[in-house]
Image 1 (cartoon, rainbow, N blue to C red):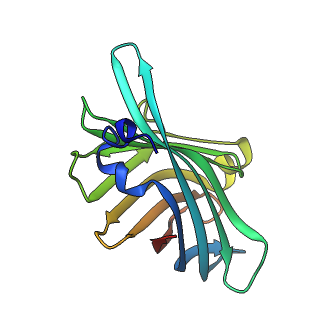
Image 2 (image 1 turned 90 degrees about the vertical axis):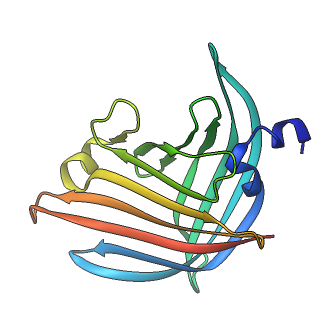
Length: 185
C-alpha cells in the first residue's frame, strides 16, 4: 500500500486489509419473533484517496462485507461501501448500501489517534441520513443507525451496531443489533 495514502487515513489506517470473525451475534425479528443468530463474516478494506470535493480532501477505505450463519454456506448479509476520513473537519464517515434497498450515510467526530469511533445516521437528516426502498419504508422503516467501533492494538477490531426499525403493523420500534470481533488475516 502507498505509504503516503496510509499516512492520510487518520484513525482508519489500522483497518486496511482483510478481516474475519466468527463470534458474531445478530438479534433481529424473523416472522414477528425475536431471533438471535450466530454468524461469521469477512470484511476487506482497500485504501483510496485523495477524493476531492472542491477544497475538501477525503482519504478512506473501499470496503465489502459478507456474513454467513454459522454452519451455512449461503450468505445472509452483504454490504458495499466506503469508510472516509475528513481530516480538516475531524469526521469519519461510513457510506454503504445493503442489497435489500437500504443506503446509509453515517458519520461522527474523530481524531487522527482515535481508537474508538461512534457514527450515526437518522432518517430525514440531510447530512448523515438513511434511504430505503418503498416496501421497507412502509413495512420495516429504518429510523436510526448507530455504530460503535473499537480498534484494538493486537490486530483486532470489534463493533456493535444498532439499526432502529419502525414496524407499523406492531406500531413499535425494534432495535436490530449486530456485534462481532474480527481478526486481521
